Length: 93
Image 1 (cartoon, rainbow, N blue to C red):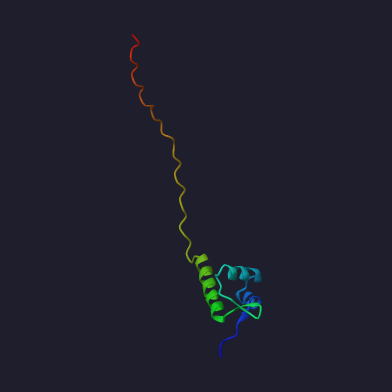
Image 2 (image 1 turned 90 degrees about the horizontal axis):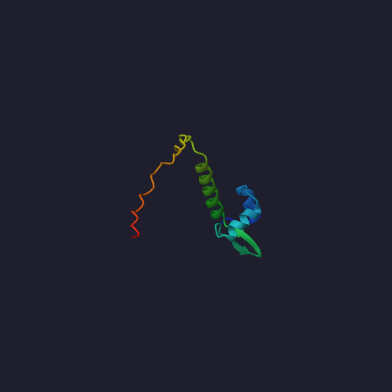
């Protein structure tokens, strides 16, 4: 027997996010849902997929080793350039 579909409210509670956010993800087609008796329902495999995805994103947000500090770029001092030489002026005779 297949596992029962869950409502958006149940999915939100299980994923630990607001129901409105789950609804937005459904409308963006990031979570698969079907209309069942006038209520959006999510299959259990989709909930498991979202849990895995959220766990992966949270793990990647935390880096286990801190990155080495980035040195600021040395400030460039403007170089003094001579203006190009003026072309010689021809005599007006």
